[in-house]
Length: 101
Image (cartoon, rainbow, N blue to C red; front, side, top):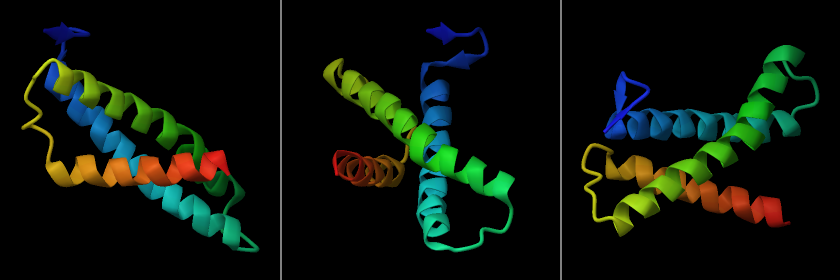
């Protein structure tokens, strides 16, 4: 199945999974930035905070919903390394706990 004509199903899922991982790293940096008194650059700090607190949650929800649907349809997710899946799931769990509090 071709999506957008240039990305196939697993290619798009791999890209979203990597993007979610990068946003999760920004989530860690955003937590550190909130602890700092004077961030280095306000523009960079705001970008990291938006990517870390907003975009990472959205991408994690999309990626893990896609994983769940793929598992229910019994499709193979062998193209995505298991550590990425587990790390993103751990970050999603932490983000949801922080969101609930």
